[in-house]
Image (cartoon, rainbow, N blue to C red; front, side, top):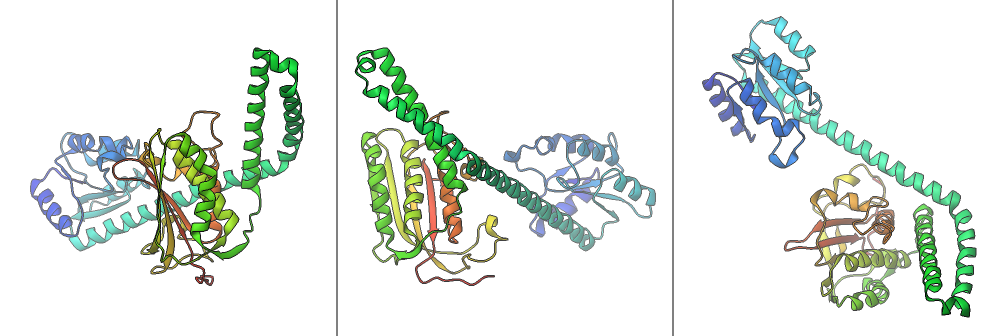
Length: 391
């Protein structure tokens, strides 16, 4: 955003910055600038927020210092860089602007190469700060997941032992003729048994998440894993009248992974897809080869067993015809306990465990919405002969 009460200055800067590939919006003064920045200051990312402000100091009505002050009430220098423009040799203006929260300044008449260098510097710093913030958030989330693991490892047996005794007692009650003859009592016992089974399932999922996974890495046909996983989910798919479509590529080479772990990943993802769909939906499973063109940002700092650009990986795409996910939840879906299902009907750990297992072998798993509706999970696996060295 260029803020200047001089129309000639605005037009010139719009032309020059536009020629460098920037999208430029211009304001003729402080009131207009603050009105145009309303969405940006409110954090509304849907309306093309401003990334940097070039702000003139000497303006009527509301001067640059007051605009700067109001912006800094809502946005820090790290969130919204501001470069001030002032007349040459006004040293006091430089000092006052920097103390008030300006990131940098230029003097008038503006030397465009200097301005361009300072804008690019501020935008690079902003990008670096955002990347650092994202990395910190990722570390926090990792720490949360690890803490869940420690908790599960410490209390799982303590919880499971009494649960097992309760389940055995309830099973005995279910077989009791008196209980079976009393409809109300039988219903209460059955409901309690179902609640205990769900609690046991949650503890079991936590134990899997906490466990030090060491897959038995081997070469295997991905269709074997897919067919094994479909055996587990086919019953639920049939009960919902869901059509299962397998679009396989016979040229896909063997994968290198733990077969048991791959079955678990596929079962978790397929069950999520089936449960997300209304009756009569379609579950599509596609396989093929995918060439890595760019690496996801979340693995940019990972070392060791990671793919290279240009490498061919085996792709398994699982698509459904359900409602899909909100755009801001594609990464959240892999967080522990995140679920879109009704409270008490799911553990929210299926995709968390799937991602952990895929990451361990240098693969990718990602989630996106499909054009036309529904969600799509893409799994990329190393080929059998694709052994990598540490980078």
